[in-house]
Image 1 (cartoon, rainbow, N blue to C red):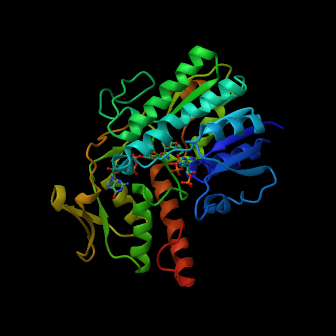
Image 2 (cartoon, rainbow, N blue to C red):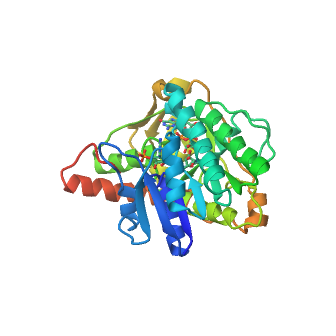
Image 3 (cartoon, helix red, strand yellow):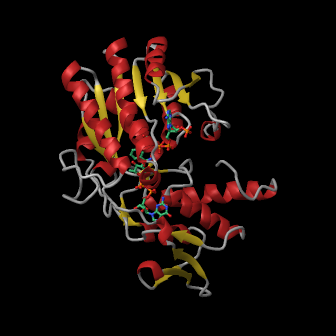
Length: 352
Ligand code: NDP
Ligand code: GDR
């Protein structure tokens, strides 16, 4: 039985990848952090939490000794490094923590592999945030990197460290440059889930307004469950490589808001500009969306659209779920969750 180690198994991608690898016949070792309250809700939602082929192990990426012990005890065939401080907004407030976890953390794992067993395959969760400022569209594997946040900078370090270990030590180090991917398991701090959760609350009467930052930012949003399939396929190639994974469609945050309200049969009209822009319910003139500059970032990535041609050719992969389907799926799941919370008498503080 092949063994895979997934760091960050409590996150969105970690949960979906666990499900996929178990279905492929792997024994999965998934890492979680020692916290005052551990959080397995995503694995639970996928019915994976108690699966006999999943072993949950305590781990912190910032601890080099922990990395070496983990790799030598488990001796995995494949390591998927998904753990990160992954929220771009927070990275401006906690740049050093972000550098340590998201950047140096990957190097800790690469060093552990080099020391313990250089035959272990390594997947690094690289990101379209490394492209940052627009130099070329659509962005592809050869596009110039110009990160716009401490998160992007840290990810770029980890990206080049992986390539460097590939070239220096012959380690099978793969980099998946994944564009934004969302799902009902997305964290609520990210804009799509913040929107779908608020739309669900507005429908059920537990929320009245959605406050957002930059509505003009354009993102190439795909479906997370389809994206983890690419991680697995990249690791099954003969030689380690770098791949862009994207849908090749881009929409503004404003478009996504309009789409999410449409899923509950509300048509939004936009009025005003910049900080004064509002989204109103066309049917009754009620203001449902407003801009709050508190959510602006010191530097923004204005436009992301990826070219996944290489993945199509070499991995035989193409996205299937449209953004409209993804958005509707997220809204419906949030309505279901919010209804359950209302029925259970919970109004705030739920982990999902
Ligand atoms: P999440 O934020 O949902 O999950 C991140 C995971 O990292 C969580 O399990 C978290 O644990 C864990 N983690 C954080 N700090 C540490 C640490 N010090 N030691 C060990 N584990 C830690 O991210 P996603 O699932 O969305 O993304 C997976 C990876 O892919 C991330 O590296 C992200 O940066 C990258 N990526 C994501 C994209 C996306 O659109 N989703 C696009 C491109 C790249 P805990 O639950 O305890 O916080
Ligand atoms: P991003 O995702 O920064 O692209 O990083 P996020 O959903 O946080 O932001 C997307 C865009 O929406 C704008 N925005 C807001 N964002 C948030 N979170 N909250 C708001 O209220 C809001 N209003 C507008 C942002 O400014 C931004 O332009 C995600 C993460 O998963 C990273 O880990 C990953 O690497 C990249 O996607 C690819």
